[in-house]
Image (tube, rainbow, N blue to C red; front, side, top):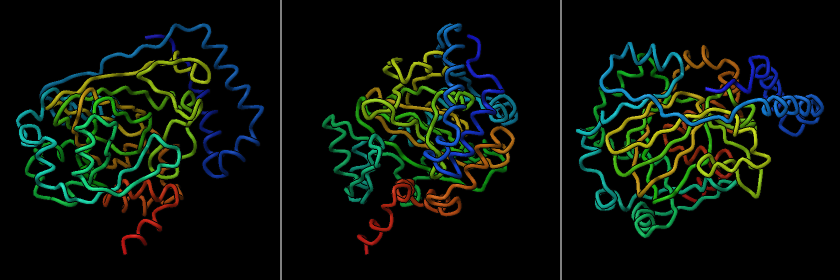
Length: 347
């Protein structure tokens, strides 16, 4: 591993910038600290010239391990890990396909939010239509399908007792969300305060991840809910870790380390809270995120950002949790002020 670009002092300084941005807004926060921010990033650029390039290394892979070892070595340290082929005998891996969902739930009305767009534009459609587009090769990516909320009988397709045992006593939030995407569909860099056991059920999905310790390089806008996104910086795009284009303004990414893995059917990835990640579907893909909110662990590992999470305003934390349980796509509509119009249209 190369030397760290960001020292502990750097992180504290940046957290102070985020504090101002969070409560005053990005534009006001920047105006108040413009000179100090420019000095801060100038010092990082100077240090970066002395460092080797960062590297992506493979995420740890394990077979069967005890709950205590999982908690001690991975959860407590906020470290990702893949349980290789843990779910290969689960019905969600053995039976699920795009045809399976079209036949069973093709008439489900869904909200398709375009997370590649800054305004999170959306459309209302059906699951059947989305799957047809995916099978035609269109780069559609349906995220956060609330399958278990609408069709709880599918709980039988998982080893729910194993999933729940991994979160120990963290029961404030619990949700299952299905992700369906075509070949080469992609989710930009983001993070959230939720723990995630991601079950790959069909096809392959590549992940690249960065620690929240490197958040000053990512420099996100203040969180409006429990999700943070890498900011739009160049030609209407945020940094794409799969393309590895390190030209300005993305040059500092070249000096930080990352993790990566490719999930195959039956693999289960533990993605810790506040870990930055981006995903790309190698082919048409289906996966399921089992999420929970480990509030105490978050306070211990990321006190600043947990405080920010609890004090979000668009929407507030309690409404965020309610929408999260119902459909995360409703949360994204609330983020952009479109939720009321959408709900009125359904009356």
